Image 1 (cartoon, one colour):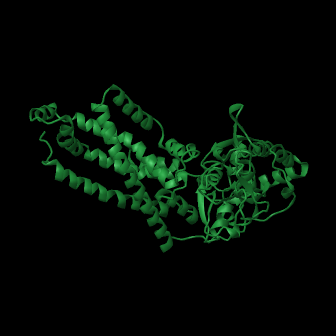
Image 2 (spheres, rainbow, N blue to C red):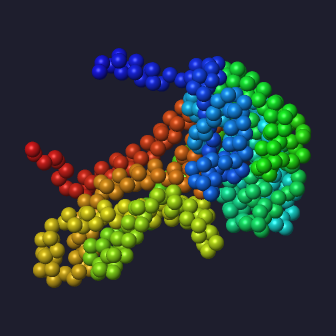
Image 3 (spheres, rainbow, N blue to C red):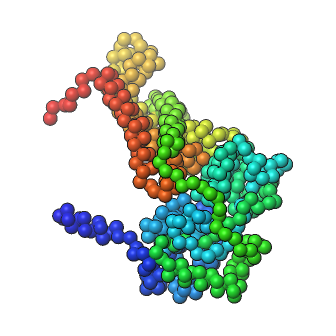
Length: 487
């Protein structure tokens, strides 16, 4: 295929939605798609426990009612919550409905409908705490969700250190374990995940820190769709259907009788400045430190496992193989969650401790197979010659086999270190702000992924290239003749 044809095909595939035509397209296909994230859980949108695969929640009922009144059907599209606005702008779905808060920043970026729910920001603290307001949180670690009105409020107070999460349950688990000092989130979330019988050690402060509204989000230019949804919401308020849906979910309260404006947290729109560069460099340092510490665990652990598999007895070799298969066969994300949350009732690890241990234990399994292959690649004559010289098994292993195995394993070890450097981005799920997470935060502040993405890539390269050069130097130093074999 000629290049010009390839370009035309790619251009055609990459064409986004035409502004102002979304409502016509919805009516033409008889379906409205709405972006949401199932991880938000009850009562927003979640799978029916009694009927897996069937979605329930007050926003499911609300979206179905809107679609019915528009004469179409509704279909939910799963996306990560923090990427909903960007995905809407890309044209991946028609509207957002998933606890989308009406802030001025979002109003500047996309179209927002009239409110369908009034929420309150609720402060949760350990039971018996003297903290009564956010103004008493100076120097404290306060959990919240990223890209929320609560996060905006906390950022207005420089003395507070926000701890960002992706899920609703995790902030309250950390608060109960003493890893944070308070949590600020919507009352819907606090009532269901924080101040419950499951967390008797926590209490909600009985004052609204602030109020805001949930709205439907649409792309700029889709004014006809915005007007249609506003009409539907007005009709639902007038005939009581909106109240019935909210009462069914158990979230109707006196706040719904009051009108409220957009969230007024005055968060300055950032630019790429010296402070942002410092934040990236700090995150890059954290990434490098995590990687080095985890690899310092992985290398000796992998060596011991490899020796156990090759030279251990049946029980020892079987135990080593079981460990390797367990950690290679399960996702590292799962392992991080188990270390940080799963065993917190017995061993309370900090975020960095859990990150280093999780990555080290995981990569130890991979290093074990690298070293095992390196040991098995050494000619048998090396061992026989060492025995002929009267060397004992431990001496043979230490002075003959391991040095040669290390030299043979050096290239894949370097590759694994670079892979570990990149996989360290996964530790953001346990609240560690490393390089990739910092890029996501910067992209949210800048409303663009291009510059933060390029800066993040440049820093990853700056971290990995010197290591690659060091590995090449070691290969030349230890490997002797490195010239290619003649063909």
